[in-house]
Amino acid sequence: MTQYTDERFSGRPTTPLRVFKRDGTAVEFDTPFTSLVEVCDVLRNLDNDFARSIVRACEDVRGPSLKQAAWAHKLATEAITPRPPRVELDANLRPVVDMLQRAADAQKRAPNIVLERDGQRVQLRLTGERSSQPGAVNVTDGRPYGQNQWFGRINPDGRFTASRTCTPVVRQLLLDLAADPAAVAGQHGVATGQCCFCRRALSDKRSRSVGYGPDCAGKYGLPWGSTGAADAADAAAKGAL
Image 1 (cartoon, rainbow, N blue to C red):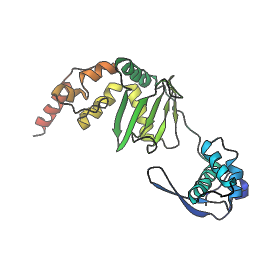
Image 2: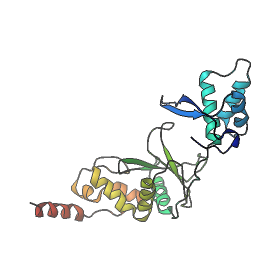
Image 3: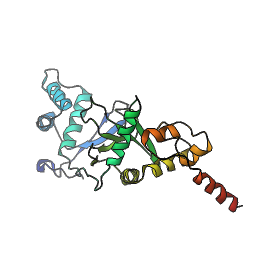
Image 4: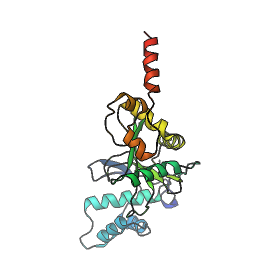
């Protein structure tokens, strides 16, 4: 049974409930609360507009809808459930921020990088001036806002604050990208045939060898032009015959 930080609920039997996200995905959870009075006692201590709106609905004469009541239990249960602390990588990812900022200065649209490792898609997008964290890099799985998984944020000074959903695969990919962006971008392009910066298919031998095209190389400040990788692959293939 889940152990809760609030001792009043430790060892209590729980009741299964379900809420639905905006994209229709069902989220099942167990609540230890037996009444909305207990739930609202917890929600009033949260600095959360959604929680405050639910409390108002609970205090209204008409009472909350079934959907609101379920979300009330979900928020309150999350609030009293212990979570592991967010972890900062013991490394400076400033090269990643600088690379994206360089691209932002070179083009009109907001730059972003899409990579894949071990079946995990990772998108890095530079935030704009209107963002609450301008100049930072949001790291997600690349799905639309509200449906995506947020892995964390690279702050403008290069510190990375991971979310609780960030995996070792994502962490290592970020470390590798900061250490050698050309190698990571190139490996993605060679493996997929698609540039990680513009998502276009790599159409000529030199671009396929490097893993990205000359335009993106210039915008992101990366080397480009060698066909060594392609020639080595051709030689290895011939040697295996």
